[in-house]
Image (tube, rainbow, N blue to C red; front, side):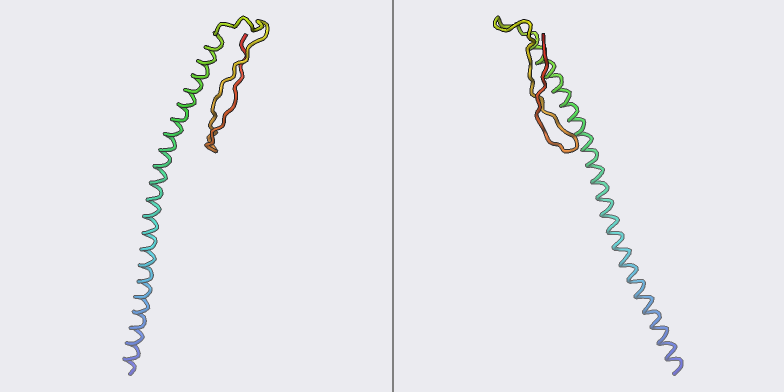
Amino acid sequence: MVGGIMLRNEINEKNNEITFLKNRVEELEELSAKKETSEGLTQKLREKEIELEEVKGDLDDVKQCYGREVHRLTMILANEPESSTQDNKTPRKIVVEVPVVEEKSQDVNDFRLGMFVD
């Protein structure tokens, strides 16, 4: 009888160990799945950061093109022959539309750039 009770206690202990190990395996599998998901998200984040840098470079190129175009148009208008009706003492005001991109909000706003030319 004593041997049967000892055997039963050992079986219960082993069952408890098995249950503990099964639970631990499940936890590790969940952690592994989360790690894989995290690694996938980290890779996507890296790709998006690279894409963002490319877009920033493109945006800088566009800003430079606009700046050159505004300068070119301003020079054309400044060197345009004056009409006979215009007073030579009053400078002409040249207004050029230039879109401005705010990097934080990514909104495009228009503003007027006024330049006076003698």
